[in-house]
Length: 356
Image 1 (tube, helix red, strand yellow):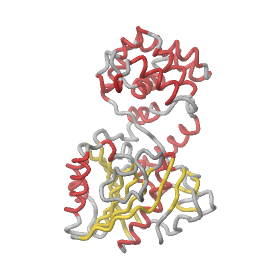
Image 2 (tube, rainbow, N blue to C red; image 1 turned 180 degrees about the vertical axis):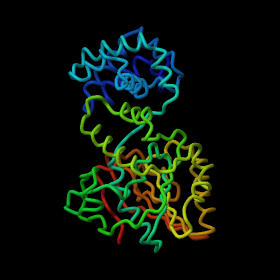
Image 3 (tube, one colour; image 1 turned 60 degrees about the vertical axis):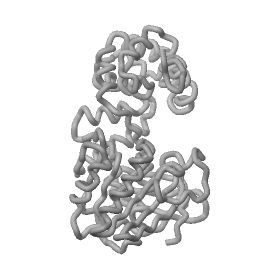
């Protein structure tokens, strides 16, 4: 059974349980290891397309069945936090409902939900508008998933150094840690007049099945993250963004056309470009340059070291465990690109570097 990087499928599942899920989800740790030890379960996994056999996809598909009320035994084990029972129930569910699991895995993309992105995006977007000299922005989020990042101006943020940004009455409240002595700037984001998301498979939070899939991608023993996701989805559902389905590079001109002329278009990418080959990343930058021929354009990136073209790496090494917060402002033939910070743990920790 071939798996990733020459490993067998059983080894992939065992590694996921013992390494990837260890320390974050005891239930997924036990379930993944149990699946790795069941030949029948692994044969069921092999019914899925090769790119859909990864534990993150299959476990999310099983969780989706739980949330839909179609796997009561697994639901009970998850509710009790019983790892052994969950492992047995997951094997049984996978074998009995192979077609359902494969169908879900085949049509859905795994989603990495983390509201911490907004704690990084908020000050970076405010900095972008400040540098470009605009008091209104239109947001274009690439790889937007459910468009939750597009409501960054509507969350509340209290940083560990006491600085607060955003809406203190928002149902979505973040508490990120600041690394180093420099605080994020205290300027507020300008008015957001347009919210556009671009994704190969966008998720509509107002659609019950789409919303359930977002919940299914969270581990079943993470109630705090589930509560944050529920709050974020409820907030986004009050003003759903425009979601464009397709290749981001191809759709960027359409997205720019949706931004009013009296607003600064700001493109955001948060760990999205790493899924693009280098050629597509360069084409992405070329699309920004094309748009800037008619009016200023800004790009806020939160990507691994060296992933975002034109953004300085500060001499940091690739795979260093943190990401670079980049800001590029393009105006006709001029490009100013800076690294304005670093962040860790999907935005739960950040270091601000820019002089503001």
